Image (cartoon, rainbow, N blue to C red; front, side, top):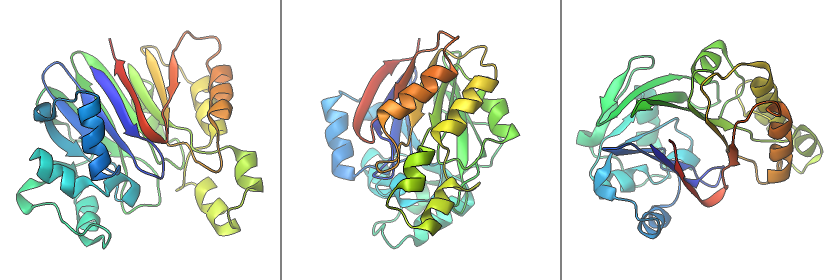
Length: 260
């Protein structure tokens, strides 16, 4: 497998995952023109992309989904609730064509080309939010983003990953002493908000990840986090384990990563 991030943060989120036969996009919240530009620059084989799967309905994850689906001529998979919210989102002027709308059920595996995919619950203040376990080429890739709290279900999925994408959104001190109003700070730090560096690091430090080969930290806040703070927190958490980790850029491409 290979992994490429087109952007990870509230400015826009989209990821490409390739296996030996096919590719999928996870979210499409980076601008349509940027996506096409990035794909050309990195030599992405657009004809190999078989589908777009969505984590949730917030605009930074779906803003370009209709345009990308039409351009790539691929189905868009999401829960029924997420599809309803995409359809009613006034910021998305061009809607996903009806024949390209595919509904998934959480905890029910489905096949897209060479990928076996299963969605699971993630706590976030959207209409609905999914993480994904994706298997291909004998490897297991797990993505957890926009996550207010680590649940037992997330733990069960993440600890079995060969490759894990995990949110590390904010630093507690920067959030508490930063420019955001109280209600927004409460929302971000709440159980339906985002995962802090401290929470991500604690999760990594207190659980076994017997097959984890590589870790990716995603969705860093622009105002309430830094690469250095994430790096230090995660490095300390996994200091006794030889697990390479990478911090995904908020704006712009990070990758390709060969997931051997």
